[in-house]
Amino acid sequence: MQVREFPVLGDEDERTVEAFAMGFDREAARVLAYLVGREGSDRFSGEVASRLAVRVGVDSGRGRVSDVLSTLTDLGLVEETTVDSEAPGRPPKGWRASADCDQTLARVRRLHAEALLEQAATVAATLGDNIDIDVDVDPTESTEHTHPIEVGLNWNPNGLHAPLFASTYADHGVDVTFTGCRGSRAALSAVADGDVDIGLTGAATLLRGHAAGHELVPLALYYQRAMVVLYTTRSAFDGPLRSIEDVRGRRVIMPDGSETGTLGRLFLSQAGVVDDVTVVPAKGEERTALLNGGADVATGVFTDPLELEAEGHDVDSVLVADQFPVPGPALVVRRETLRDRPAALRGFLQGTMGGWTDATVDPEAAVKALDGRADDSPAAEQYKLEQALDRFTGGDAVEKHGWGWHSQETWQRFRVALGQAGVLEP
Image (tube, rainbow, N blue to C red):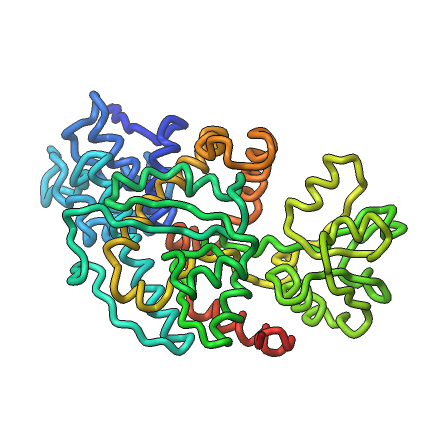
């Protein structure tokens, strides 16, 4: 009897898988990581992998592996050839990686960045802005110099922004600087006014800005799911908050026109309880009003209840995205930036994918890249990031297409929902 050996993906390959998965279907990322890993090994370098070897190596079915290998071959990331065989007849097909890990990763990130730019133009058309862009040739910018990019964050730098700070943008021809803004509206205004090139802003804030006449386009979803919650303490609520139905007859405090306020009103409207609550306009810190008896429930982001718990309060919260499919914070640009500066935006997206890989694999190291800019301790910021990675980054879009993916259908449905709730128009 003959014995055949097959290498398999192990824990040491996880970083490579995650890096490729930023720009691919996850199954394709595993297959690509496997083939790249074979080429980099002493035992199997130069040896063509059969379909069976790939199936065993990534622990996947025949049909799925065949589809993935075909896609990777079409993209030029792997080469199709034949396997040496002593059996009679036509030799079976085999595959090997076209380049080493670094070269393959650079190709994957470029392909995904170009796909995101093209998707941004598609989404823009859905929102009413037709934009013609060329992701391969940029006539307005030289490829021989570093492109400056200024990014307006939706708050002061913190653990949720760590993937951006962990990125090595210079490797992709861009020089990125960050400016903290006081919320999504401020970040959106900074983009609209041309003070920054890219803004990180809530999805609802983007659509409200678009409805107000700003020609803004979502470049990518930074996080896939909205982070807005309704929350309270057991003492303020005089008992547990189990579901949205429990807020009937209560006072809910929310800032008018903000991302949290807009999504809070949408949540109440979609749940059919908006007419049964008293909305308290926020004139300051919602958390303070909640603790001082000025409201029974507050709107905020998922870190608010975490911080109250750290202070010793018994906290209950309801996440908006658990009830309704609301997109998370988006990276936003002006339409002319998308049209005129694709090379700079492509480099920014490629660099950001690197930062997201680092944050996914090693959150502690990613938070260290903030280098003292955050208000809380590194441990607290790392906890925020880890919670966000666990709760807001996954989903079908990412599993099938990679980091940042969004669809025109998602934005259209969300815009309709905001309109029906009466919170789309500023």
